[in-house]
Amino acid sequence: MELKNVSKVYSINTLETYALQNINLKIEQGEFVSIAGASGCGKSTLLSILGLLDVATSGQYMLSGHDVSGLGRDERARLRNKEIGFVFQSFNLISDLTVYENIELPLTYRTDLNRNDIADIVNDSLEIVDMASRKNHFPS
Image 1 (cartoon, one colour):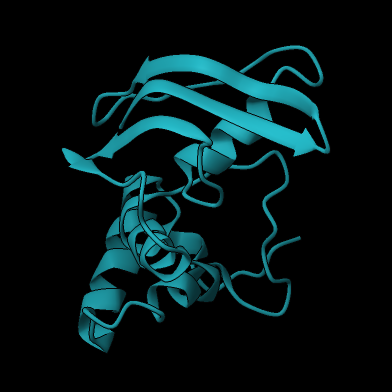
Image 2 (tube, rainbow, N blue to C red; image 1 turned 45 degrees about the horizontal axis):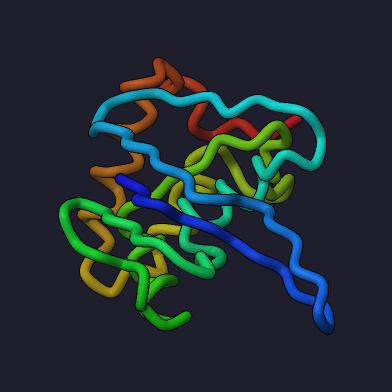
């Protein structure tokens, strides 16, 4: 993912407040990134744009070599479901679902995956993080 001169401006009447101003950022596939900063510096706004939850006021956002700056809400939602994952400070797991089911749930919205594909993805993911033995456990 790459941001080129991305800005996010909030306007109220004639007052403009920049949450982000001319941000340039490139994250290569496989990199892990941590975003830190003072309260109000634009971290959440940046994550919302990177996660396709919000759109920049100006600039360009490239994801997997494609310009996603002008995508509509539904297109962003579809792309987010396929391409983007977040790790939040709070995990927001559903307490009535097992570990397996919590991983499975967002994949069920993917129309390009059948039940076997989903099972493979969930099981592979659990193996990668060494949690396969806990797949039937519930969040605490």
